[in-house]
Figure 1 (cartoon, helix red, strand yellow):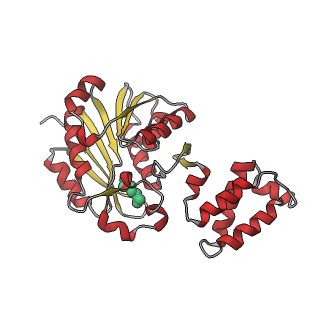
Figure 2: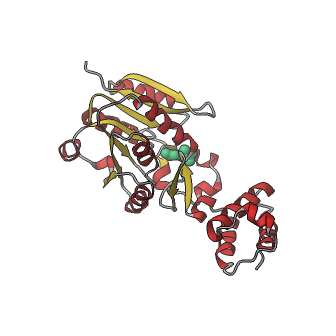
Figure 3: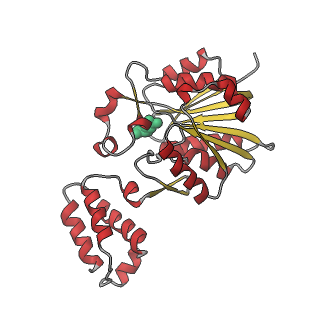
Amino acid sequence: MKLKDIQNTFHKALDSFYEKEEIDSFFFMLIDSFYNVSRLKLAMEPDFKIENQNIIIDALNRLKQEEPIQYILGETEFYGLQFKVNNHVLIPRPETEELVEWVISELRDQKSEFRILDIGTGSGCIAIALAKNIPNAKVYALDISKEALKIAKQNAELNAVEVKFVKADILNVSCDEYVSALQKFDIIVSNPPYVREQEKQLMKDNVLSNEPHLALFVKDENPLLFYNTISDFARTTLNDKGMLFFEINEYLGNSMIQLLKEKRFKNIELKLDIFKKDRMIKGEIANE
Ligand code: GLN
């Protein structure tokens, strides 16, 4: 079948769901990934035919169900690196790239080897981007989901970095066990679930019906559950001068400052993302 005809089929089937440019961009991403045909090649050879059209028609049907293109392609880009994704992991977000950028900028002058732990790693995007960009870091990452860890491990391999992955539920681990098994850390970073059930109505359908709720939602009554537990964990498992970094819910910036103060973190800094929303926070352990 001619690719051009398939492109027309895409427009007919998807025009009521997406903008024209978006449909073209999906189509070109898919033919590049499935058939290794670039936009330019198709422009130069408009009659280009493919044999196995089932995979692209299947992708079209998934787009019609509003499945995110990243899951259909099975990959996405984060911090200039390729990551495999499936519906067991969140699609890495641009705001999380900003968190990674912040951690890296705080560590640029570090000379000696130091240890980083990423809690709730999902696709592994934070841990792997840090390992790739901070050569003297020893990186650990944990997640409750065995399926997520499977993807994260593939991503570490794909990006040729060493990350030690651990399957654990942060809400049910004993710090002492961790300290003795993995030793202490210099940096703990986390993008835990933080969307309140009450915010569901603000979210896009394609996020709600495709991305893992385990990675997204917390109960309205206890939205800082993970932050509470992780901050306590960090107080015991961080070295002196160690730093804790979080991605946070944009509506809970002040509560997060409060929480880190209560837990006696120092040099607390709240940061906005590019959309000017409270999105990241950092605290340090300092000898009292
Ligand atoms: N930023 C993500 C979203 O808006 C949520 C990530 C999270 O809960 N950690 O969908």
